[in-house]
Amino acid sequence: MNDTNAHEPVRHNAAKSRYELTPPNAGEPSVLEYVLEPQTNRMIFTHTFVPPEMRGKGVAEKLVHAALADARAQGRRVDPQCSYVAKFIELHHAEFGNLLA
Image (cartoon, rainbow, N blue to C red):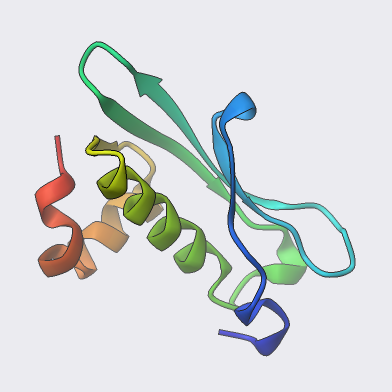
């Protein structure tokens, strides 16, 4: 991960149903969007976006890791409809596979 983002915190913006990482220069944030299903206690991850200038720096990985850790802390199951999130869980199945709905 690039040092410019290594210490930037991922923020859970519940009002917009997304996790965000805003670069130090306050440019466009990277986001991981979700839909919450309260009746099933599921987070459906729908879309990951990283601005072109931030790609290839581990930003999406940091967003997904933080979101999955948060889902675990809240006792939620996850449904990775976003292909990036699905691939991340596949690659980190030992750590996050038990969260799958």
